[in-house]
Image (tube, rainbow over all chains, first blue to last red; front, side, top):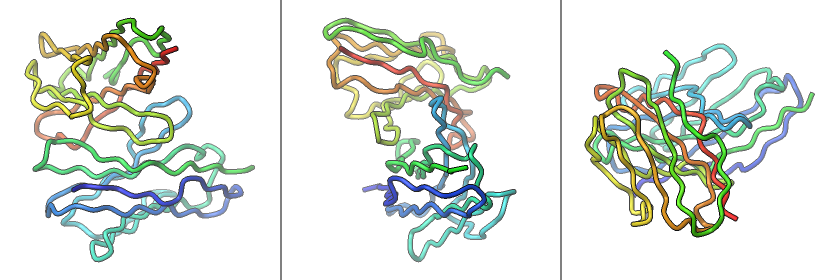
Length: 115
Length: 114
């Protein structure tokens, strides 16, 4: 069975602090994609980052960075120097190419950045 | 490219009424997906179309739910005899067939059943 776990339900940080959002996934498939989406109060899901299962290289994109470790089935996401506009719910998601072409989302982490 | 649009953005209905939502995908995308998101949860897959063919349906899609994509462009999701448990955000997404993992989401329709 496929599952995505985001153990942190709510996080509050003070502006300019770094914050890491945790994500653990479960799948028996060897080919998959992992995503982070942001959902502001307006409701629309905004794509942030994607990684495929064959590429564990960690990267930095602006203030965003991610740490993908297949050994621990984790795909953590870090925002550096947080800003008030980063306040939103963040979802980690698993996409399986061979099973239904659908996303499996975690329950989300609500991030509040305090000015 | 205007992105994925959904109409209406909000719908309040009384229990037992029927409701219909519309989704207009990105024009060049041949795949269209429906998801449901309840409060405090992540989106859950309901169904998807490739062109006009409905290729997969989740067990969440009870017989009161029906989705169509008659001309392979826009799609409608109808809920008959609504129940309070149907209150949720209904999200639509679209993608190309070659990159189905690149799903672009619409703003959603928030349904409240009273």
